[in-house]
Image 1 (cartoon, rainbow, N blue to C red):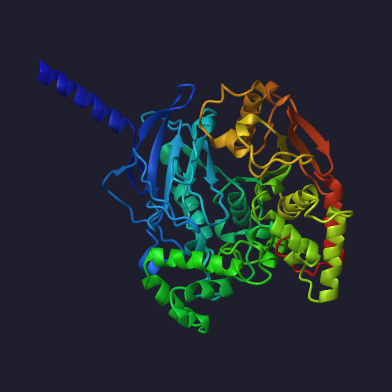
Image 2: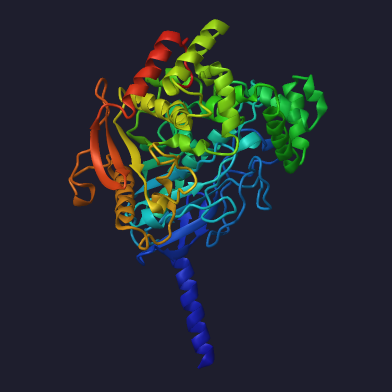
Length: 564
């Protein structure tokens, strides 16, 4: 009798395992049943390889599709590998990190529901972050989003020196991290139907550098046809931090911390040989050594990464991003998909740190350091003139050291707002664009450090936690819960219908979200400090300051523009 019971239990477990297994065109994958906070069952398939490990001769280069497999890939638990991160070292850093997770409401034993797919590209300045559910650098939960009958996908891509090293030629073209993102989308386009997904209804979404990545994929001919919609949260390829004009110099200087010959040599092939043969942690350490070296150079404030470009970021090269970002948007040379995009009301609060006073003193001493490099100003008198105009706009009667609010507003508008708003304006001539400003300041966001009197109070990517946290929100104020429910509905509506308000519904106050159109910028303000309401606003967010920046670019800028 005991033997029969054991056999029965074993058979049920085996049947349960088969019920959580799917067969993709690339090979079979076993998953695990999990539950949302409300008890709804979904199925998780962890650590699926979407590319070959980018090791050895594949390091720094475009990813290669994985070979099909016949043995069942065990995706019932998550491999902890994350791609190498700049500045911080973790035991789980590994070049074998090109994996994705699929979370689907689709019961694999039932007929496909052809569900929309929301693919998240994580942020982190192109130097940190991951797509895991749990890791030393944070995690990303699907629990809020799969409640709304969408498939959620997250993945790792190469970062820092491994993802964005470039010799400025065909030896190491650069943009390997973006190429990873494209390869992940190719894998999903081919395989997502096996998980109950609609390959023609893939929406890409990202926050911060993830949003900039989404924008770069909008610009990339190599990503054509791989996605049907895009959501950009607090980032765009037009933001100054998202693009690096000096990547070749940075790459050779980075290599010099592995072999000093690159202090003088510009032999690209030799650099590739040396860095591909070096241990991965040696290469990672060289990138940190470069960053520390650069931060100690004279006038380092003129190269602050948030204002002038992170060290390792996307660049212009023929295979992935062949045209300057601004010019591609202006010319309509883009993937013309519907877009939902926006900003937080005071992104610049993220600059409140122990280095702020030193930065502000440098701006007070030399206002030209405030100038966007994308203006391409080539003479010193004009450079000084523009710097003084910016200083006069943001702190007319005081130094920045004594006017931190003016400085925060400068960071908000220079680093984030003007780029996102200009992106929306330019793309609106090519596709549907819906814009938002997230201005709700709630306890759920957990922002206790980055606040300042008189500011908009909502710091960089605060909307993130309302969407991807995955923990119970019932203990938070009712307005926080309401804003959470609204954001989840808006994002998943867009994934389903390419429209955040496809029909009038009570949760969203029965509004019809206006599109941005040429000459008529309208947007939805999501909350206002403690007020959780959705409000349709006429005109651009921060309109007076946006007019100021437009005048600066029109009067002093030299096309072609890359960022804005």
